[in-house]
Length: 354
Image 1 (cartoon, helix red, strand yellow):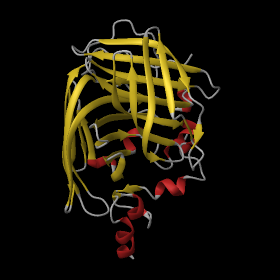
Image 2: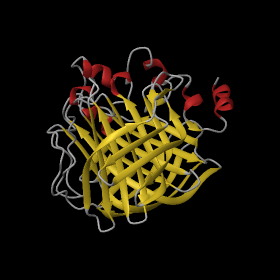
Image 3: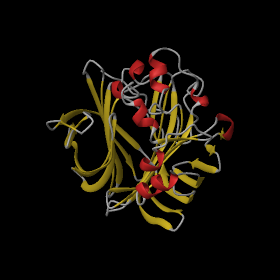
């Protein structure tokens, strides 16, 4: 069975020791906000994000730098289930810092505080600087008492229970504002994904009337599966249950990535039926989806991901990924404006750049 370390002392505990210094390791914080109409935001500040060009490939060869040398901040905005803005901005190490749960990425700051987040964004990108604020107000997650899964080199830690959030972001004359359910977590490892035994994963979250529910399924490279259903109740109490995954017949996207239009996780009387509705991020190794989640205690819209580790940063796709990652100070691909910044007007921006 695959094991995932879930238990940390409390929602404000420090990061997995050594995660920022272990070559090939990683640490990222994840925040998503979503309303009932498919509008929302995802923020991922990270050191050693496995998806950056060249990082996972170097880790497989045993030649990766420490995560502190590869910082990045990713921002996605969705309108009606479609991408409205996208940017992965890789920064210079000296332009980032971490003071406990306060992160600085260039001119942007993100402060996580016991189930809550205040992110003030100001970062350059094709089409102009993205500026604005993202706020999350959540119930802090209490400690996990009897955790059924542990891994000494990997930590996955939801940081809050039921949460609400709002966003107010703009580039030039474009502005995206809204509010909805929200979710925060953190992921850290002392080695690259495959070395941790993670071959493929999918997960989704939904906010139900009385709890946050997260479903998480992981497969080893050999195909062995381990799954969890995690509830964080209204008072922050976590309930962690080993589960069995029942995926529908898989499909492959245009890049060959395998995904499931629906997936059911079962743990006794607890069920989580995840049905994909939109796939706003749909790449060769990673897919983010907006979904409908049905459970024994209610239904709600949700958000989730699919990732296949062996497909991350392989040679044939690396030039394509480089087109969608903006490096502070360059060099950057001439095609960056076609894949980053506001979705509207990308082709004219690219032509003007010539």
